[in-house]
Image 1 (cartoon, rainbow, N blue to C red):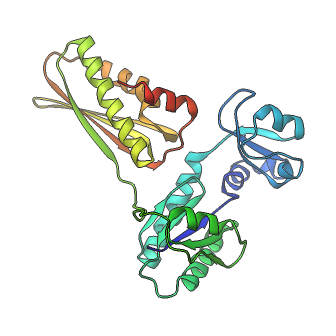
Image 2: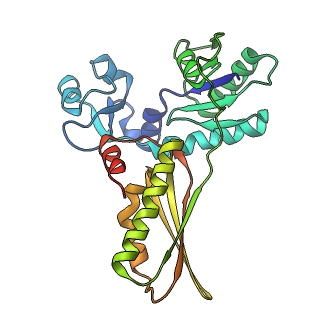
Image 3: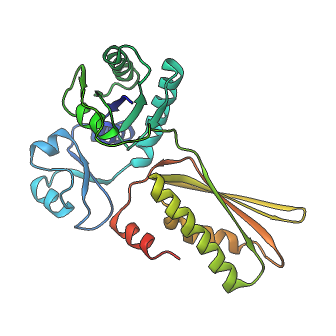
Length: 283
């Protein structure tokens, strides 16, 4: 297996500047949540020059670059942009394409005769489409391809080593679904619903997959109720539990009702520590 990684390292900051042109001259730092301990997920070159490093806590970043604009991270917008790019690549090159993080696209080039030429061509096209910095690397596993992509700003870095372990090729993510029957018994119905959400959460975790919308379908006899919940960022279903329960509670259940949850618009799952803790204790 040979994989081509296209990395867009400046994408999060570029999207902020695109949405807020008045910030074009100001250092920008993106944070993964509120509070002094929230880690930095991305920083503009001006902020990096002043010592801001992704991963450091917000309080340290503010100490090094007090003039920066500190904003919430934007993984939802990043994945939206990568989806647009990935769809063009899939049509242009007829190759298997998958989004593997909020800045990276992975392409299966196993059947390509000249992987360097293909990598250069796709990276060049991606630069034209986006106006962004694009780095390209090829390897026999996802980690090798990602590491190779960090080595060069232009051209294609090639890792010729065989994969260290068997690894399936990246696949385009598909919506996940699950069903449960509610019977009009509030406590038992809540337990059944939370059990379904916990099962879907563990499935998301195993696939490294989040969602950006949840569709609820409730079917009883000839009645079909449909409700769609949308999220502005990739979301683990446990994070959506309160909204799901609130939506279900608006429908009176007097007998057996089949509830189906579909976790749509999938995206890479980036788990915060607090989500990991919730997942470990989910019913």
